Length: 209
Image (tube, rainbow, N blue to C red):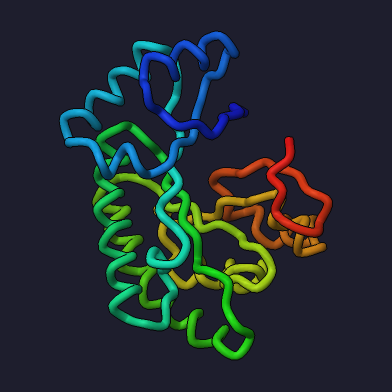
């Protein structure tokens, strides 16, 4: 088992120095570097992490309003899908194995069925793009009020596609906020490909160590 930390990358040399000082061996990064830099710079990132003895394990895809794979507005959903599909080959170019994705944003109860259907339209296309790129998607269990808050529903999304390129990112803090940590884990455990390890007091997403 390898533990990674979430970190930004810039300035790169300062990042490598801090990681080396703290004996960090693996990292998860945000999407910004991969989408904003040229392909040559992204490819150079792979070489740079290898030279510094760090594994670039995962990247968190864009999420939130405007980056919603289960948006009810189809134009918004397709825009989010296009951005995340663009991210996948760049993640592969950097040597990243897992791209973490959110099922969606906070929703009203009456819209749950519609957002679930929207996500079912997004996931097959995104998974095919992940297969083509050679990376895995980690669909994250979510906080109360979000698509993917229920473990059985999240598992259904993954099993309906049944691709080795689509698995689960198990977020411990999100599961704790849903007050069923053990049950969520037991439901999802066979499909988990990566974790987000964080703590809270079950009232909100505090991201405590």
